[in-house]
Image (tube, rainbow, N blue to C red; front, side):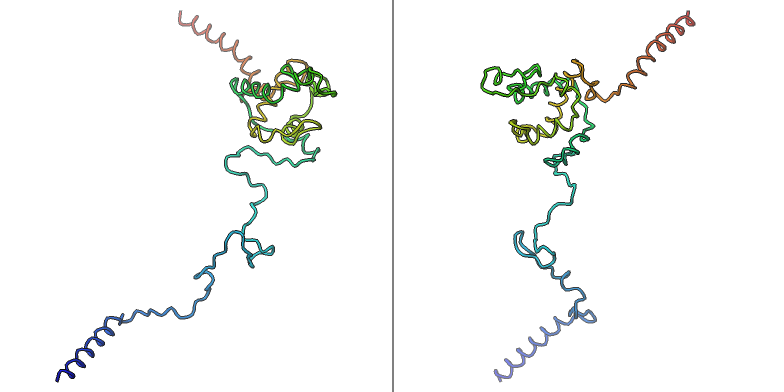
Length: 225
């Protein structure tokens, strides 16, 4: 009798278990997957071989022309591309404080050779330790030198001068060049173009408008009287 009861209890438990697994009309078997590689994607470690690419590299190179975060100013010069140097420029403009900072950076990194007056008479050359004179930025050879050539010299170095790319970031390089160009403009060089955003044309229009506005104001006061 006890054996029969045990069998009945076990059978009832099995039936209840099967009933609980019955989901009615809901089908729980997925069947065949159309794109299993998308459902169960395979992961590749950064430095492992990857058959999905022709070069078998999992770590991909950035898209050509990509600018790293924090380097918002473009700087795509390649070493030795002298043609690109001559046309390379920037649309940055600097405030009086930034120009002052550019002068400070110039004195730290450049003045030791080129001199704080840009005359090539820096302490190292004046001491007689170097036979060749550094560039005299007040000389006609450099007064009208394209800013891109100067930038390339700062970034890659020139002759005995080493690269200063690790000491000066992109903006600082342009600030130093702006300082040089400002001093050159005061010594027969090209008109200074790195100042505040106001262009020479706008300044000229403002200068013309000044007297006219003053006359209009005077006329208005006369009418009030």
